[in-house]
Length: 260
Image (cartoon, rainbow, N blue to C red; front, side, top):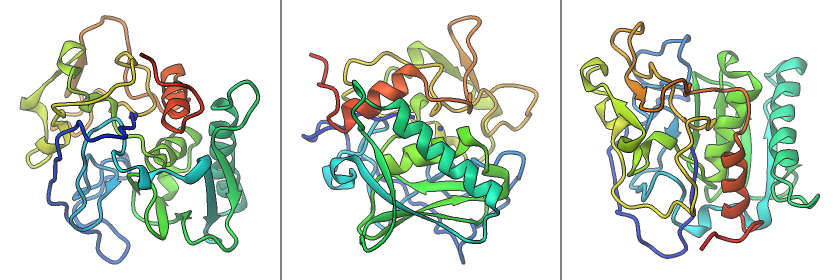
């Protein structure tokens, strides 16, 4: 699931897809705990859209109001999580905060929620899913017990920061082949690429934490739905932020200048 490139002016094509609304805090449809980022009825599997919301481009949220002011992100963690689970969530936030520092200066800062109207709240539920960018009030980061791994938690936090999925880039066909014949019926929209995008000078990132895995939404999980054109690379890792992931967050939040 990637990245993000923030456009202060509208150059992307406004793209809107009807999304099935989660019911009672759970995602409607058949959920497979072995693939917790593949939630039926959500945009690209793990992105929650508000009613009438448009996704402008895949790399970032176009609306600057979706970015966290000054990179400060208040948070709360549900008490339903165990101490060990809470530690994993906190470690994910700490890792993002440390890795995105520029010359020792914090770019993204997570702080416990107190009085702030806008904050992210980690809640237990079905699967792993998050809205794209900051909402007008609380931004839920839903993590079931199958999602409590540092890399998966970072992936979902990155969505809340404004990052989207790497394989939706308009130039993705130069780097991967989409095997449409092996995509589950009804999931084809999850593989649509966007037509225009400001990529901030960043190259396609096979190593991104935000890239789909090779077997995403596969009918036959022994066969891929995404094949890298560069031999020997692996996609879909959920272990760490790639160098490009880090740079994109830094550029998105104004901690590094945009490349010319």
